Each structure stands twice: as C-alpha cells, then as structure tokens.
Image (cartoon, rainbow, N blue to C red; front, side, top):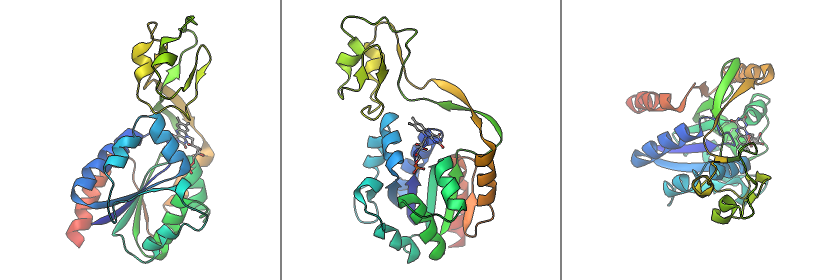
Length: 237
Ligand SMILES: Cc1cc2nc3c(=O)[nH]c(=O)nc-3n(C[C@H](O)[C@H](O)[C@H](O)COP(=O)(O)O)c2cc1C
C-alpha cells in the first residue's frame, strides 16, 4: 500500500507512533509529512533520525513543512487519490482544532483536507482523547533543584549542540535528544523521559468529538490499533 503519515508537534504518543511507522514502512511505501512543530518535537525526543531512516525514494519521501511554501502542492497527491490512506499520529490539540473547523493552512491540515477531497481514508490519533488527566513524557529537562551550578557544567560541555545554558535551562530548539547531558551530569540534574500529568481541556476534548462527524475520518485511541485496522483495509482490497 501507499501510505501518507503525518506527524504533528505532540510529545505524547510520539514514540509509539514512530515504532508503528517503522513497522509499517517495512511492508508499505510510506511518505512522511512533518509539521514545523512535528519536526522540532521529534528532534527534542531524539526520534528524528529514526523517522528519517525509514524514508528515501519516490513515495517514501520525508516532507518537511519548513521546506514547503504556502500552497503545499505535495498534498495534491492526496486529492488525486495517489495514496491508499493517510495516517496522522500523534495529533496535537492545535491541529485537531483546525481540522474540525475546516482550516487547511499548513502541511498536515492540508493533507487531511486534500485526503477528504480525494476520498482517501484518514486515520487520526489525537493526543486529547478522553477527559481527565493524562500522564505524558517530557524530553530532556534541567532540574534546577538538583543542579549544583558547577563552575564547569559537565552537561553543557557534553552537549554537541550547545543547547544548555548552565544553571538555567536547556534550549529545546537546539536539543537533538541525544541524552549525552543526562550521562555527563554528576548530580543527575538532567532528566530525560520524566513523566508528568497534564489536564485535558474541555475545548480540546470537544474538538476531538467533532472529528467523528467528519466524513472520511476515523479516530483511533492509540497507534497500536493501526496494525489491526490496516489488516482489515488490506483484506478489503
Ligand atoms: C516538548 C513538547 C511536547 C509537546 N507535546 C504536545 C502534546 O503532547 N500535545 C499537544 O497538543 N501539543 C504539544 N506540544 C505543543 C505543540 O507542539 C504546539 O501547539 C505546536 O504549535 C503544534 O503545531 P502543529 O499542530 O502544527 O504540529 C508540545 C510542545 C513541546 C515543545
């Protein structure tokens, strides 16, 4: 199958999404599309190279929003029905809010809109799925209560991207998620993969509910459900 896979800037479900993306790309031609935030966040979690490695070749491209201009002609492939399906996982509250309001102003929201026009079935895995609190994972973080503000910061010295301002913070836009800082700090003041609880806002949950009303879109709770769904799609073909 030819599959288009969009990634937005969500840390939640990102690792699970990349795991399934890798699995699918072994058997199918997968074009990966990254929102600007999707690319940044993949790097922060140290997952960008894994995504890059599954791409290469015609219909196996890595399409970055930042390399596109305003009309996103690549998404014309979807309106022409060149893909068997579009998967977007994970999907931020921002992108869901746009989709349910018919907005198509970036690579991913255009891909969803054009898929609808080309009758390409779209599977969406939103971060904001259920009301209540959600446990999610952070990228590298400088824990100021553990930081001893050493004269020479070993974590900053170990960082190949100059992302650490000693005793202050990690500039996540420079961080590539390599984890060298976590190993280097003798006081374990840099954490990676710390779990935090975030509250799901009603407006975001409401937007996710509206997704179910949009023709051609199927909402899934977790990327792990994709394999079963795809088996069904293959059977129908
Ligand atoms: C480390 C990190 C993790 C994030 N995780 C989420 C998330 O899980 N869900 C979400 O809705 N936004 C998350 N965001 C915020 C989005 O990246 C931000 O709203 C962005 O503008 C979304 O753009 P996009 O929808 O075009 O990808 C995260 C941002 C950062 C820096």
